[in-house]
Picture 1 (cartoon, helix red, strand yellow):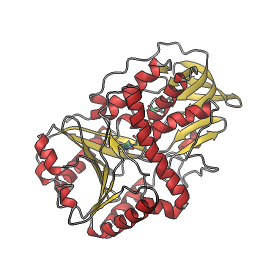
Picture 2 (cartoon, rainbow, N blue to C red):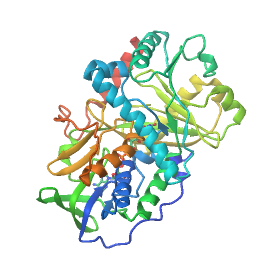
Picture 3 (cartoon, rainbow, N blue to C red):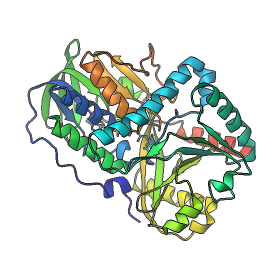
Length: 425
Ligand SMILES: Cc1cc2nc3c(=O)[nH]c(=O)nc-3n(C[C@H](O)[C@H](O)[C@H](O)COP(=O)(O)OP(=O)(O)OC[C@H]3O[C@@H](n4cnc5c(N)ncnc54)[C@H](O)[C@@H]3O)c2cc1C
């Protein structure tokens, strides 16, 4: 078993880096070379704007290359809960933003001919307990009347037509979810940005920011400095770098993934005849999908822990056990890849994007970012270029996470709380 991301291990290498030294100035400096930063750099360079992108490591090496591979519609929390917290109008706006983010990814893939196995496949949310089905039913009823007339409810008697497992009691299908090879997409995005003229500097960790005036910042890195007329922060949940205001608002939470050896196509078809993306209804649940070469990608918040090699392999064992429970036919399959990554969780589990102290930012996708980060790259590029844009995540106020100063001491408590909730509800 390799302790590395399948997406990274099976993607081509990035060949578009700009040689040192850094230029003295740029119209825009983008900090972070994941989906958000790279999509912004691509859209800026495509408009002829002089853009420098800096990454602390290799581009596409953090969440954008370490995720579960789902590119779905829908926010991180369930729609009914979202309506209860922000009202139907705002919740509908957010939901539609996710739907347009998925089609934005599809259009970008087609326009730039990025070879990444993108396909619409629909997302099936599975009721892990009979008691969870009525909530799915209520969500279905609300969503079909408001934001998604095509959403489908699958009753307990029909669920075996969707998944060959005893573990589920019905489900909800959102038809417009998709999936892709995240490594191939990310590298394709980066190559396209470089081709349009973005100057991309891996291994340039930002160590300090000096505000000169207005939006203009001097950006200090481990390999020189560059002054940006404007700067976009696209650093995910990084706790490295001079961004304390943002770091108090985003909690990095580990999530883990395993990938099986290639399986007989007929077996996968028997288990998952509609070949969708799948997510279970538990708080500490699982998400899974297949790959073009017939593997199963199976992830979850196996443990409330950070990601490192020891933690990843322990979490891999937890995931393997869960996989065998849901699909006994797979209990002897070999796990080829196992990794973890840090999810950029905000208190309201929604992204935040805008401007703070003259710095532009788009962060905090809370585990649902493979589509939204790509769309937000374009939205922020338009904001930086002072063009009309529709930013669904611009809010007047973004409160710090109470009691959080960089060490997420409360994660084990959250873990116990959600485990108890899963036992009793
Ligand atoms: C295990 C896991 C599973 C997930 N599964 C899904 C899923 O199935 N579906 C979904 O929609 N979302 C999923 N997500 C979330 C999704 O992957 C992210 O929301 C999205 O990739 C965020 O992209 P980003 O560009 O904002 O951040 P990142 O990809 O994290 O990029 C940030 C970049 O900033 C760089 N950086 C940080 N600090 C500095 C610094 N000081 N100087 C320079 N550069 C710096 C980093 O090196 C990194 O390259 C998952 C995330 C994880 C971790």
